[in-house]
Image (cartoon, rainbow, N blue to C red):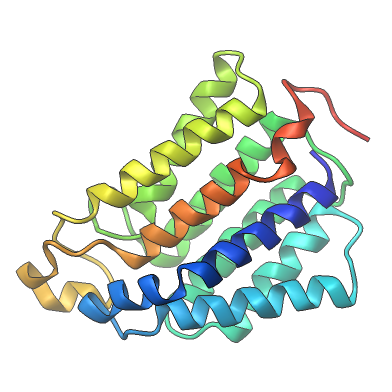
Length: 217
């Protein structure tokens, strides 16, 4: 899994956010500020532009640039939360040009930890955690069972989508949506929806090219 593959993942995620921008904004209009889609689209387009302007050579440099761009360009809670996710993943991978699938899984778990540290959310709070945590668990489980990274990422993507769907009947306990109380029930969480796009992007990118565990060069 090379730095180039990580860059393709980021670009694929940016494309998916742009494609689903209006959907994400509609979801946020029901339980938030009605700006999640436009904010994330603006942030990811800025992140891709930053990568194009000065392509990073290492995993940490690439993902840190994405994370810092999101923190600076995306308003509300989404910028700090998704920015922290990318920053922690990059920090875990380190200043290397390639990583193993197991290192990616550990990095995504570190990213989950960053989201928890930043947002203080847990299972059932109706946040991005409810899609991200099952995805990280599914990735770990698949790799432990001997699956190659492409299969493991497909499993993680499916788990994220299931977690996203599971937020609909939940009552929000964190963030602006929590102010609505029972009125938040019946609405899919936009942050969890964006996480599902992130894992869909990973599964559809070249990240799986590193196979079952060797370090690519």
